[in-house]
Image 1 (cartoon, rainbow, N blue to C red):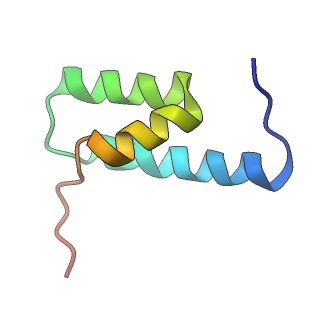
Image 2: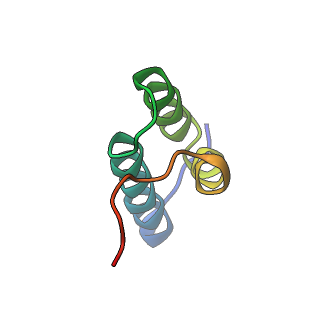
Length: 63
């Protein structure tokens, strides 16, 4: 397994937490939310990038 160290690992952790919070707050189905969350948890870097490109977006409206 690939290990992350130092500031790089912290940045990945913060980005993954942000992704999971956004996934949970999205309007996607429960099954979809579970699959996206598992992807981000199992493959932290690749999962985050895939979520960023194709994942469900948050239902909050930015003003």
